[in-house]
Amino acid sequence: MGRSEGLFIKAKELIPGGVNSPVRACGSVGMTPRFIQRADKQYIYDVEGNAYLDFVGSWGPMVLGHRHPAVMEAVEKAIQNGLSFGAPTEAEVEMAQLVCELAPSVEMVRMVNSGTEAVMSAIRAARGFTGRNKVIKFAGCYHGHSDAMLVKAGSGGLTTGVPDSAGVPGGCAQDTLTASYNDLESVEQLFQAYPGQIAALIVEPVAANMGVVEPAEGFLKGLRQLCDQNGTVLIFDEVITGFRLALGGAQERYGVSADLTTFGKIIGGGMPVGAYGGRREIMNLVSPVGPVYQAGTLSGNPVAMAAGLAQLRLLKHHPEVYGYLDQLGELLRAGLRKACEGHNCTVTGVGSLACLFFTKGPVTNYESAKSSDTKRFAAYYRWMLEHGCYLAPSQFEAIFLCDAHTPEDIHQMVDSAKAFFQQEEQG
Ligand code: KE4
Image (cartoon, rainbow, N blue to C red; front, side, top):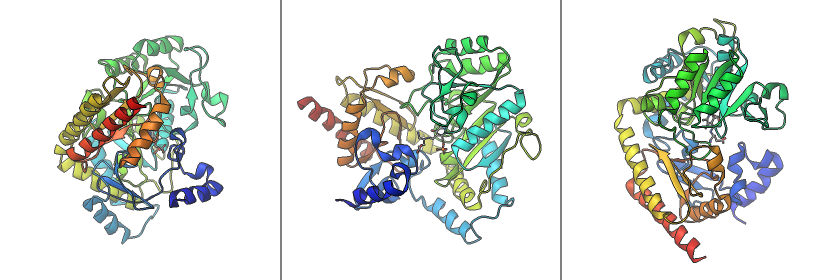
């Protein structure tokens, strides 16, 4: 028995599913997860010392690769002063200043400790600002595990939501409405069905939790117009896309501004950081200034701020990273498209995000994403791992590229994928 197998047996006695976040359990790919010892640049190493090209990057934070010297140095310096004070620090002011500079629609920002917290807080602020209760989200988009976001569409498309998890009260779910991604009409119908009742519409500007699904031409602009027409707060959940698709995130890339934006992952440089921010008139309602309560013991933690600041400053002073990530992404998508040609697959993505769907496509929303053959994906996942490529263990996640990846790494991944399809064809 390998060390990962032994650790997993022990872990399952002590931690639900043996993991601290469900997707890590590799349930949908039918194998024991690799327990990871360390990571460096574009590589990740399991407890048996096996090296893999890392195409997960801790689910997005490691956009500059693991153990970037400037980030590590900033953390090592910060810990000399202590780990946490529970009091305001200069680093938090510097972080707020930098986020507001890099994300033009953000006039004020509050640090929290995860993307979930950022989303939960942004929705509360939008409800406090509008005095309304209902929220629109999109099927297939994931915004963390706060109750209001663990909701799926009720029986009819226009009905109120029903819980998508045990423990979520129906009373909470009823205020969450579900629309279909890239379908503006499904949004218009909800606004017509609930006039003056919708506090916020939250969307992943590029969906990356149903695999990667790009916004159709005019989709984001259409959401902006509908929210303006209805006095609804437009929330862009940029936990994945923020500081990844451009320095100004998806809002810069697609030229559509949100009223509130949520951040996570990259903003923390690998440490637990989330943030939400946007229009001053909304953020000024947040405690202690206004009546919308939100708090956190470790929010703005100085060590986490040091890691996040170091990473964001590197991205700000080296904007050429984005051109490089775009090139790597295009190289990967072109290579995968060639490798899977004739094998009933489709490849999607933008910038440093990509996805290989085991369905013919096109994949434009959750319905089409769900038509993927997850058994084929599981076989592909196991093959790629055996060939040194560490992917997200689910069809409905993204491939995350980072600045430490090289064209040779992309060729290695594409060649491994090509070999998978060849052996699959040979049965
Ligand atoms: P966290 O609470 O996990 O920091 O962020 C929640 C979240 C919010 N919004 C978006 C768009 C997200 O993608 C996420 C979390 N992403 C997943 C990966 N698909 C995290 C991986 C996991 O759950 O372990």
